[in-house]
Image (cartoon, rainbow, N blue to C red; front, side):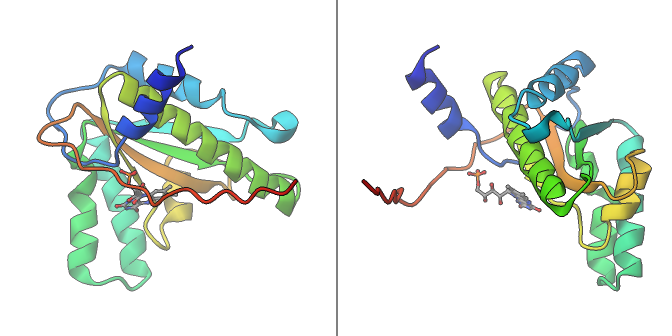
Length: 184
Ligand SMILES: Cc1cc2nc3c(=O)[nH]c(=O)nc-3n(C[C@H](O)[C@H](O)[C@H](O)COP(=O)(O)O)c2cc1C
């Protein structure tokens, strides 16, 4: 374990969509990254993460499901039209769901665990040289997207991850200085 290497990895990960949509990412790579996601901390061992990966024409189907939900939700036509094809910008889109728990607290903790898992995925992808983009599920589209993925009712779509090999320049990252309040 090398802390400086870890620190460099954390800083190197960027939310970026500049990727080559025509260059595939191997299924084994995606499955490995999903496996790393499952090593996130998880209270009560509920293992709440669910994964669905879309490649090829299925990316268009995913876009249609999201776009139809947005249209039903009253979104403007140009926004809806853009959503139909937006998942074609990456060779693979991984939808990550968080299953509901048996109480509000467990559901909230499941979501936290899944978000931690997503970060594992992103850092692993960065270490492999992949570009990633964490997108939220469009407003009003959570349930249709979750259903389309085969997730159980009540699953929160935590992330729609665009994954691909980078093209062009990476965006510059920045963070405000950290503020830690110490109490002795
Ligand atoms: C829960 C979550 C949802 C996000 N959803 C979106 C999104 O829908 N669209 C988007 O452009 N970025 C989204 N992002 C990415 C953030 O905008 C991004 O992390 C932030 O701009 C900082 O950039 P960096 O990741 O390169 O440091 C999301 C991030 C998180 C954690």
